[in-house]
Length: 352
Ligand code: KG4
Ligand code: ZN
Image 1: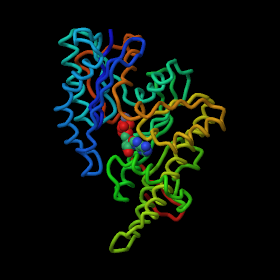
Image 2 (image 1 turned 90 degrees about the vertical axis):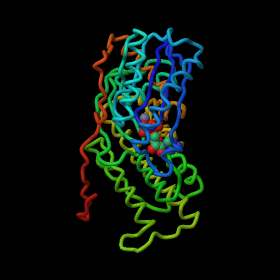
Image 3 (image 1 turned 180 degrees about the vertical axis):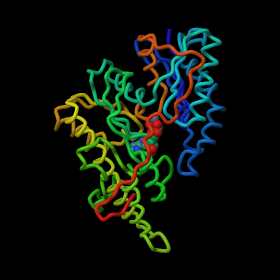
Image 4 (image 1 turned 90 degrees about the horizontal axis):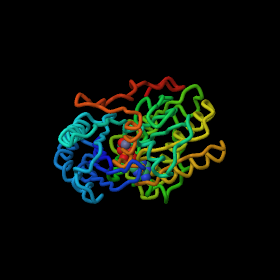
């Protein structure tokens, strides 16, 4: 008897049915990209409204595609943290309603732990613990030491923008659509990644496992619209491609540097990665190279399990195995991993 997993942390409405053997019986994802595209980023209010409209049809579609009746659902699981508060609450309300009407257990799971659990789904076996976890997405750039699938110890995270947010904002500066990551990746294919030497803030600071991307984003902006100028420059296609490629290179190197440092500091030789940005081919191959250099196993799920989906809600079986069942008091934790924004002081005395 499968469990129903519901995922509404940001702007994807998703539902999946997963068997106790972690087999994905169905996985449906309704993207809201077209609703947010004109704003070039997720608008929380629009996301919440779309979740309300879509959640029940998506759950129905997932049960139909799995070939089961709702009465056969053994448990209902929902991502309760982190995420946008309105979006999270809609998934949680749906999960509570279905679990209580079917008289089945309710499980709340962590979205970032679930991103990393996608490795277990993709590679079909338990990871060797302790392992390192890297989540690189639109909302997070976080490193963890994993002691089990559900026991995450934070090693570091971004002190300002998430790496996916930087991709989305640079895409917007370059006049590309939303979400920006895939479009930057495409444009970067024809550009020269060495045409601009953009900053890699914190990448060489071996004392900490934190990331910073807002300075990189600002550096790209200054190339397009130099400080003090009245107008943005008109860029040729070649210049835009060079900026995209150089930005992508700096972002990838910034992420990979800290994964290497985490391997050195912890001695862990298994790295699970997840989150939308790990769909990026340049990042995937840089991580594979890093694995070879450090003799570490880097587990990278296929791209459909990197971006938001509910199949990774299979992690709820780990909670069930540990008898970690919630009740109707279950609540959302939108900002659980959020660090206070910090300012980075540069050698020339300026701040970001
Ligand atoms: O994990 P995800 O689907 O949602 C969040 O939990 O945030 O990640 C979405 C982020 C967006 O910022 C998107 O631009 C980025 O992942 N992304 C990519 C690629 N595909 C998605 N970034 C770089 N290259 C890609 N191919
Ligand atoms: Zn995500």
